[in-house]
Image 1: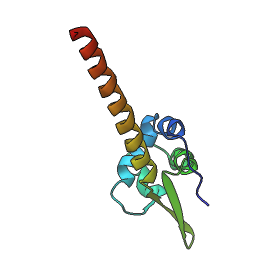
Image 2 (image 1 turned 180 degrees about the horizontal axis):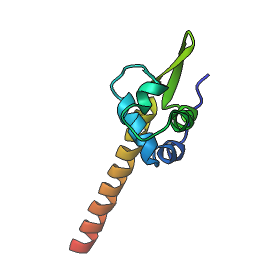
Image 3 (image 1 turned 90 degrees about the vertical axis):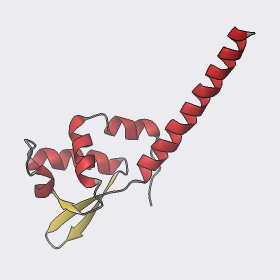
Image 4 (image 1 turned 60 degrees about the vertical axis):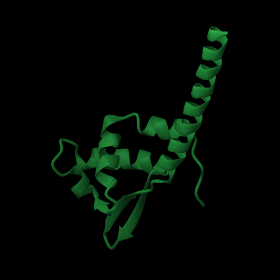
Length: 106
């Protein structure tokens, strides 16, 4: 069963430069091994594993076992949820600014 994570948990997970880098590599929709994700970077496989675990804990990454190898994929649902959350906050700010403008102009 999938646990819904708060926006704060997802934002916190994405607040790390290495995790943002991993999300960027995973956004292509393909499955990636830890070795693939560590390739061409200064990040060790152990560090990649640690950061993937954090992303997996908030539902941004899912793992697939394929024989002896574990592959990782991005689950974009939490990102869409964050976008909805940011859109809501943006509209609330717009409304507040319109009210302030109307007050100042009256």
